[in-house]
Length: 311
Image 1 (cartoon, one colour):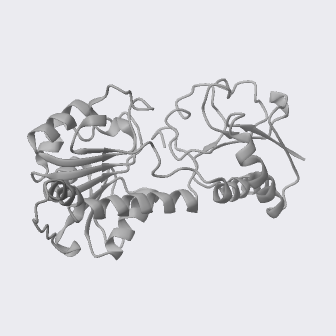
Image 2 (cartoon, rainbow, N blue to C red):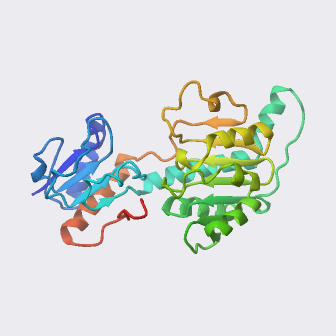
């Protein structure tokens, strides 16, 4: 029997317990799924960082898999005590949620909803006629599983989609760029920018005073990726000057967003409370079970984290 420790917090246990048990049965895995176990008995750890979850992986000497319930692993991967294979969460529900969030807010920016609302408040009959999607360049910064899925969805709606990643990628329908020069090329063209990069030392402040200045005046920013991707002071300055027309922000360096933060009251900022791509137990449990099955049979693990890259 495989001992599986649910180390994602006691508050999450009631939500995850039934879907995980059902997925394990469906995958034919004989398992003891538990909240408590002697560290040396644990074969698999289902993990999310938090106040009541282990921070020291050293005692888990026989653990062969740490499966994160989060897509981002920047709070897990750097842990020097973690020597076990770590897999991040990529599941259909999470991906679909991100696609819906990005498409919805790209369309909101594309259609000029903020200008429409402003005209309505002023009782001003001022038609806002956007260009066709085919005339609107949208940049996706980050072409992993989530970025690629969002880019394909936008291509399906007719947008000009420009994709950027640090290494070269090829995705049908998306004009892909990479490297420092590629980032400049993308930003100089993009009227809407979606940031979906991982949080690493190399991606911190990807959008800063210099890169924001490359964008066409009045461009929109949508960040459902990581708070560290944006220099907050630079973005606020760009919003104040009109260089950036609107920012929709779902992730922040400090969460919950502090009550006195300028983003809350800025007229050209939309704040959403980290909702773009929540992990949904019903679909994610099957991903967890499949990775455990792969571990037991020796098949390649899904979404294995590259420690050197940080994701």
